[in-house]
Length: 447
Ligand SMILES: *[C@@H]1O[C@H](CO)[C@@H](O)[C@H](O)[C@H]1NC(C)=O
Image (cartoon, rainbow, N blue to C red; front, side, top):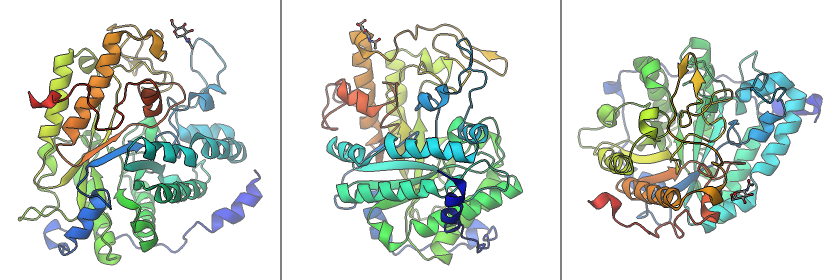
């Protein structure tokens, strides 16, 4: 695909008119509408059956690349079988290594093929009622020196929303990458940088968020898009949380509710803060919650301590998440968790970084120790019966725990190679409840 052709298309996406970023306000001075609670409730739950919890799945690795989800895109750069030197570590570097023309050629093929309408039909048929679709800021606008081509990812998002509407699925639109990165994870598009709140980055991300809030709260989307996540996984301990709240969350809320006057649901990730951290944020004395849903993510594979847990310990933590996040102050949903019991999937921790499970992890001088083997991790036929049972048990326990509150959205629907991280492969291997309410291990969290 040629860039000249692109340029004309792209210009139609650039909303040049700069919308003024609302000034930060003191929380106490904000007016919150409370009359639309019933509408919001309908949108929070499945629109037509809103007694049902959210039972969703994430569309990972599609509009925001993650090396471990589509390793084939990144393996093309391999020069050395012994190490990952020269392989881009994230989507930002994928674009910058290839240049816009070649990256567009390869990514257009990826966008066209990694997800098609059939996937959304299969998701619906598996019983899910919602998909959460990650998208990066660069789909809407870019910094002057960014390597990305903007705009196209939006077409695919809108196509996916149409497929969801046609097949009876609801959607959370999830802004997954901020300019400068909100967490330094490769899944933000830019690894090893946490510069989201730097002024230029914040300004751009805020402009993008306003476009997202404006577009996906319009009538034509409201029957299908039932939530907009303001930003995925900001790394609370590493950012200025006051600045984040006052110059990002509150202006976004004000823009949607006051400037636009719309009642789309707002999803706020917990920023890895304790459950009760958010109890006093944007809550009314009477416990109303302004149409704000808190999104908690739950994994037990990103530290050696978690990987070493016994089954009983893992189950105890899982069930405590259900109980702990039952908030009187906000609706809460587990917007990410997985079936994974190891971190063995190649590049799960990032290109060039191994797995803690088998002791091959090494990053910034931090290494790991051996817990178990990662050999044949992606070949289910080599898994012990115990591992298969534990995987199924773990999925069921998480469903039970998270249905104590608003529901769950598992990460993610498919990967090229990883079974643990791919719902479609878990289903194919009988490791996943079908229907979703089926229980081989009922009542695990009732003890
Ligand atoms: C998976 O494991 C089985 C049993 O050891 C083996 O026969 C098969 O070849 C393996 N498949 C792959 C793709 O490695």
